[in-house]
Amino acid sequence: MDSVRAAKPLFSDGLNLANLVVSSDILCDSWAAISAQIDGNHQSQSPSSSETVKIQEFEHPEYKIIAFVTPLVAASHLQEEADLVPSSSLEASEFQFLCSQDSQSFAINKAAISLFNALRDSKLSPLKAQLLMQVAKSSKSIPHIITGGCLGGSIASLFTLWLLRTLDSATKNRPLCITFGSTLIGDDGFQQAISQYSTWNSCFLHVAHMDDCFPRLFLLSTAEQSLYRPFGTFLLCSDLGGACFEAPDTIIELLTLMSRERNGGTADSQIFNYKSVIESLEQRLICKNHSAFSVLDADSFQAGINVQVAAIGLMQIQLQNMDSDALWRKIVMPEKDILERKNQALDPAKALNKMKVYLAYFEWYKNKCEDDGQGPGYYDSFKNKMFKRDHEVVKFKTELEMYWKAVVEEAEKRPQFPGAPLRSRWLFAGTNYRRMVEPLHIAEYCKLGNRSYISKGRSKHFKLLEQWLDEHQKQPRNSVPNNSKIKKITSSLTEDSCFWAHAEEARITCRLLNSGGSNSAEIKNLVDFEKYVMGLLKSCAVTSDIFLESSSYMQWWREYEDMLSKRLMGTSHNSELTRYMKDGEYHCYK
Image 1 (cartoon, rainbow, N blue to C red):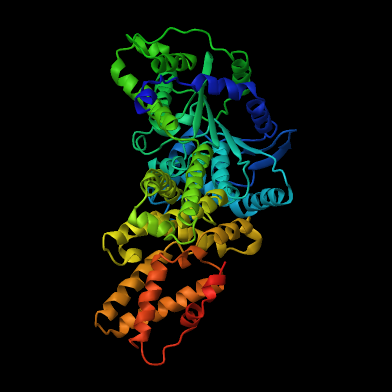
Image 2: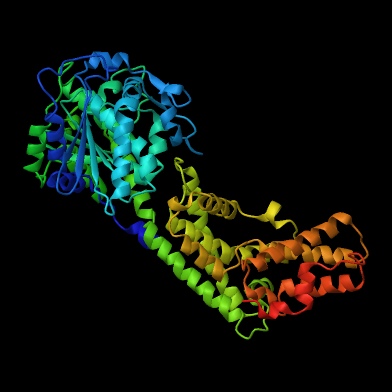
């Protein structure tokens, strides 16, 4: 299977994506919303001035557009504000939620974060509250396009990120941010923080023309050239056409080459008019054949990149005295790496459904082990591996473990926002997996004679799945959907996936005491285990398979009952659980 997958040809879809974007009305409508707010009095001012920043909402049948328009800002003025503000500073505190395990710090452009902070209380907070109210009141959320040009595009990007933190868990219709001629707004850490959460990264489309100096403004500064990094998808265009690129290294290289090609671009304080660019792109939905780079035996992916580079007017570069191999490494390979990672990643919904099929096999396995009512149950059956089915289930256990470890690891890396790191659907599926499969991990661990599974042998992904469920259940009731699903899971599986680890510890303690040892700490552990089991029984949080005659729990009970008859627990030990077991009440437990 891997060899077949590796042999499958790769195709660059940058042109198709560009054509798809252009064929819709989104670009045209977004730029029209910006243009509607630009007037003759919109003169060049300080980038930190918020009084004349315009924010307006435009209604369309299928979506709403929110346009940010800032005063004209001189490119030289923005270059003076090219400093980066670290995420640890008070200025960037609103975006510290982007910090994660893999991206613990980042920095944001000073001009952009300063203007965002100046607008936050007076304009952005009310706008955010208004959008959240619309989502809460509407059963069908209307998509929002958030757009802006130049510095307005930077504010649109920051506002979209700020909004995503809240909206991500509340609606499937995440906002789409479209910027025109926006400057780069963050460093490598900022780009990584957004890109590692693919659903957020896909919310950004940046349109940049070869003649517009602002998108590449900070790349012209030798002091900051290596610090600024792009994120999201870039629609790079020229008078010849346009194409989309996603790899940050490719985008930086192309922006730099575009700068050399045009040696500057728009005037120092002139807003580039994208209306004619969009109209030109609409007329070129099918890109004509262009001369390719003179690369022998170019594969299908390289051929696709050839056409994309030709579409943005950079084919002339090959005529210059440049190392074509180095050029390909800088442009082609990063894009190819992005595409390969996409192809290797399974569709999340399909992969989850596949895991549900594996869990269905576990349900069959569990029921099969309990069919005659006399068997040991699936925990002990797997532990002793006396039947063929006990060996066959191992491959499903391995597949499930690999999948959920990857899911948990990815969730742990993401920028954190209020609520569980996993969406409800994955959280409930993960809980089902943990309660069904972790007992088999315990069985393997204890079969080797190991002790202290919870502190020494438990996998991190089981701990996090349990922790996230606990955090989810502690949220206010009106903010926790589908609690009935949790109850459904609880009714079919033992709630504490570590139940058998506690039972195994109790059995070991009994053996120690029966062999002549007398330790007050060990006796206390048995008393605590009794209380633990009785608590589960009272809340119906444990399944009846623990009472199968050959189960580890019943083996513990018989060893424990023998201890009681020898008065090793004291002369007057008569707990609630011992009465429950001696009176046979467990036969009626369901």
